[in-house]
Image (tube, rainbow, N blue to C red; front, side, top):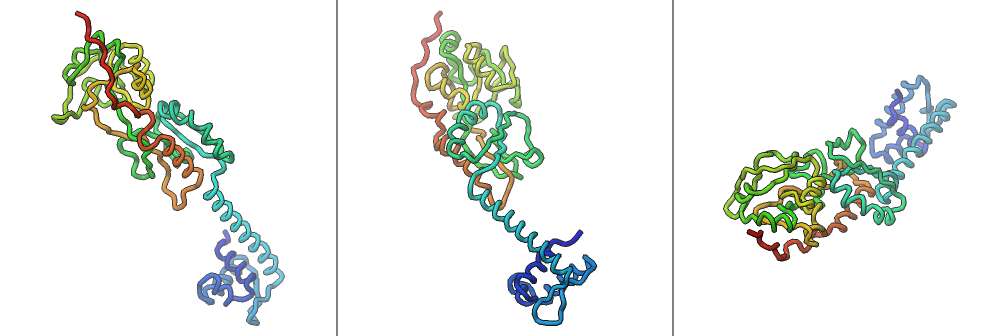
Length: 314
């Protein structure tokens, strides 16, 4: 295999007209240039230049090789220009992976506006809750909800993930409103099976950490399915506000014990480390940061006081 660096040096010698001029362009010594050309000649098994004068005199074979080397440099320069343009202007295909709930509710609906702003882009979107290996699967950016993003990736925070303990006003009217986590023992607590402990719910309240035993008639592995069960009046669930924000805002759901549930995770945009971040990744992340805002749009107004449901009849 011919060393392409040797070919590049030889092309510079031919273009500049002498070993000395090529050395100045390449910022290396004249002897290093001469040795590189000699190595190339040895590799090819043919003399490329006559060294009888100060200027380069090409042999017949040298002229043919020089033409190929020159074209190689031109192709390399074009590749460099192409990469630079892709880094400056968003174009091509952007491969995105997202968790199911966030991708369905917030990412997919925003793509029409994003692509209208960047018509030279195509989005290849994968919606899945399984673990994604960015390098192995060729994913440009992954949107994930996590407490600790992988250290080997670059992670940009898009939004905090706030969870609320909630049920329908009708459920609370019938079963009462819990004022302390211990009160949950009397309620139908619906379980998200990806949580660490299915038999207990953990809280951080004014008096510190507290863990209470809970039980319920439904165990489900999907937040959206859990939210539908809660909306149906089946019981109480702990759900992220990016799923139930609208339901809390319009009063379809009511949250309780909000002082006991801390922010433990965030939505991140994650990508592989790179010296020059491609424009398509940069504009994608910037678009969603601007869309979500400093306070996520699904959280706005949730801390305003709302009228509680009537007390249960006796």
